[in-house]
Length: 132
Image 1 (spheres, helix red, strand yellow):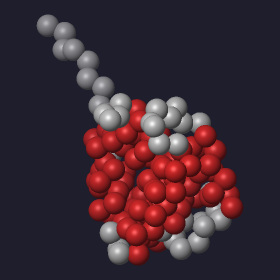
Image 2 (cartoon, helix red, strand yellow):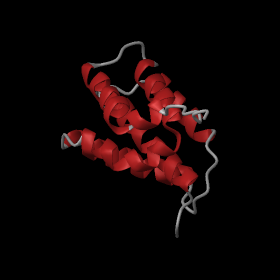
Image 3 (cartoon, rainbow, N blue to C red):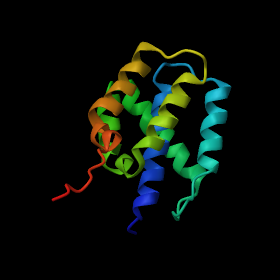
Image 4 (tube, rainbow, N blue to C red):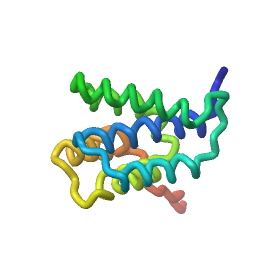
């Protein structure tokens, strides 16, 4: 089944958020609550239920973290995350900061996400026609 761009974005956003809350090795209730609330607000258009998808995303993110492939994991999501880069940054900043402190690894992944993977979409220069 071919997923629409919005659904691919939703899935990539969940995977990214899960990785970002797991990467520091401590999962707080506030992070889990934020993630659940964020997921609940998504317009889900998949035959796979949100809960099953989340379970799979947790497994994939944990594996990426354990094998030190976190940046590669983010890179795999990049094309779909570009659908709404501003929302990605908003969620990433919130989920990494909601527990009161960003670890060095969280900060490193945020930088990679915003300065390497989504930089063009975040800049999005406004060009106006030149008057002749």
